[in-house]
Image (cartoon, rainbow over all chains, first blue to last red):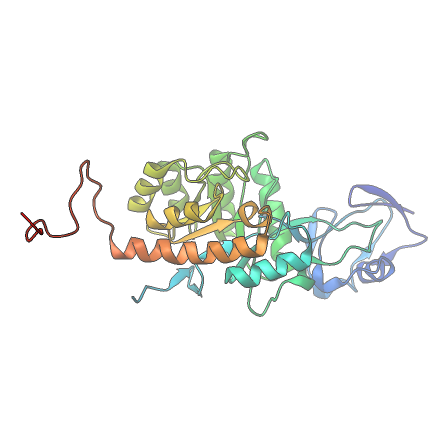
Length: 66
Length: 259
């Protein structure tokens, strides 16, 4: 299945939880914010929210800025 | 001399200098500069995680979050909607409801779009945010931001990253007179005297990034800025002498030898 991850096409074998995807990408869940289909999802629900075919995901973190 | 504490939205800061985290030669230099600056609030930007290259170190590894308050910005946003979306993501990533709100109106000058800024301020304040808007130096716009619920007003002293120094002394003074919330001069500072001047005009604080990060020796400049902000603040509280056209002798004119 195909999703859009940070604006790019991304392939997954099957639906996966947000926490599962983060683990696969080696991203520390404590340091990111996530939008799933334009809705911000709370950190404590990362294990419950499942990403499906065609979904759009934005994963952001803090970078240097003024 | 005792000063009143620097309080924004009920939170007290020990330093009146707020510094950025962008454009440093390295994260390690940034950490040293932060230490030298004495600041206890730093700004950060909210951006997409690099999915393909996970090797980059995390910015937060180099910020002592026990000492530093993290202020996410909405830099690079050109519409109210974009800024609101970014602010909400920043809140989620940082677990604080504070935002340095930027809605940029023009790429070359990075001047704010004040109409959109005021609109975004209203929405975010209703949503429970503590909004610190980066604004142009228009006292009326600052008043409108205040009326919209902004926790501070942050007029520019000159364009972001320009290092031109405080180009709008009179407007900053007028904003000082008008403002009932903290006034923070945000952007334009190039060197220590600029920061001191901003404080001498009565600003409650100064926010800067490039002046420190882009200096030949960022750590030394951070230290200079720390002193400049303290000196400028003291001078403001001390009350400067009026400017006069002609000289006025400091030594007695009587008792001159041989007269």
